[in-house]
Length: 89
Image (cartoon, rainbow, N blue to C red; front, side):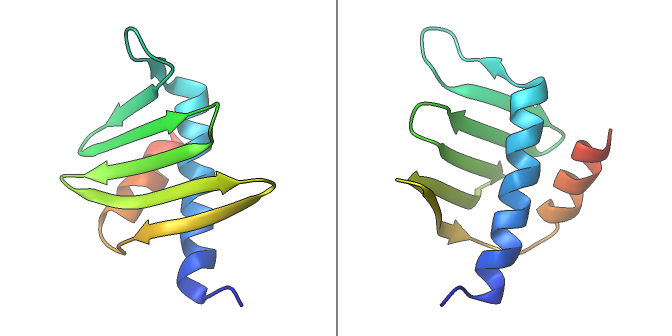
């Protein structure tokens, strides 16, 4: 059964993914895409579907497993507002 926190985290994952796909840049010498907005840093590995959001520390990690997504780390906080504001720009 999926928790309320997982549902919330997956919504934030979608925002972060759309942001890094639209505005992210490839990190030199790797396949890692990165986007920075204020105190947020989003890292995304397109081949594996691994996405991390950092806000001074890691606050969200989602992995793509086969055809599903798995939230492996989620810490609610102020960063969520920053992510929503960055995605709205």
